[in-house]
Image (cartoon, rainbow, N blue to C red; front, side, top):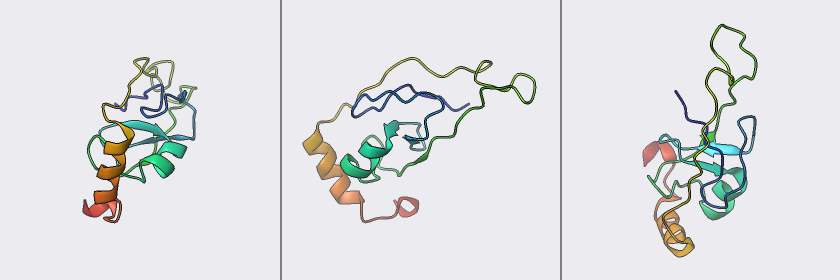
Length: 102
């Protein structure tokens, strides 16, 4: 099941489960829309993949046992291990390659 991480790993902005501003890579690294566009340039600094909007888990169980109440969002905040200069250099190498070809 997808882990709904609570924050942007770059700027530490809160990204609650219902946020339409949350983006993830295939490893569930989580960033806000502003950081994905401006800082990361659609290159995950952890894996080199691209980003997609994070799905929103329904608050209401429209089917038994399938809701945010049954499967709550994560609470462990994460931070990037890389500095801005390293991130910029990494993104520069990969940003021209479409995510599906990286």
